[in-house]
Image 1 (cartoon, rainbow, N blue to C red):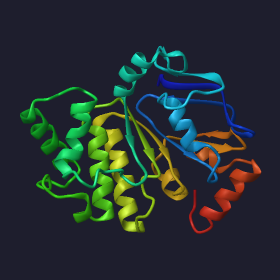
Image 2 (spheres, one colour):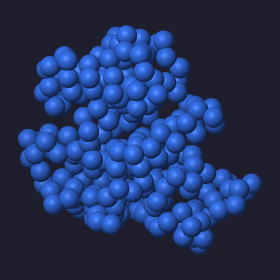
Image 3 (cartoon, one colour):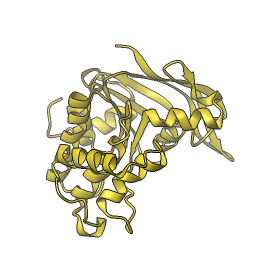
Length: 250
């Protein structure tokens, strides 16, 4: 395996609030890595730094051989084409149809104006996520699970190399949550994408991930395979495991 994203000694604070206090973590190409930890520990801030929306106070982030933290705005625009972002609430535009939502990044990110190409890619994506023929529906007409899957389709339509999932199962019942987790695995295995997740679904993260990174007090307190992290002696990691796996062998 080779690293596709590398984060080194990353620091970020907002006023007196220290959020990231020296993050070191490597994301391997073609793997599923899940970032877990308590709410408010900086997981989303880490994501925003990785794609250049936020600038760190100190440290570096590399995407392959490009330093994200030193990139110009034009370089960042180009770099972001390699990343897809699946938002926590799907973040679909309510005033747009499913087709218009999925076409949005084709037009605005890739600059593709050919409507026939739009239609072709949209149909392919909807078929792939198991929702063919819903192009003309609006988000309000979709269930929560369907909106999540359309959000994934929109993030995939530009053919990124890395897909960031921000709390993909939040707000879904356990059955629908498992459907989305299985979709993450399909994205990884069938499309070959590197998948990086933020999630509170600890049991699922141990089931689907190749590696897990535990963020606590602004640093990666534990990182490794699900098996190695499950044996961690770090107090916060142990607390998470004991709370989440009391009825599940790991």
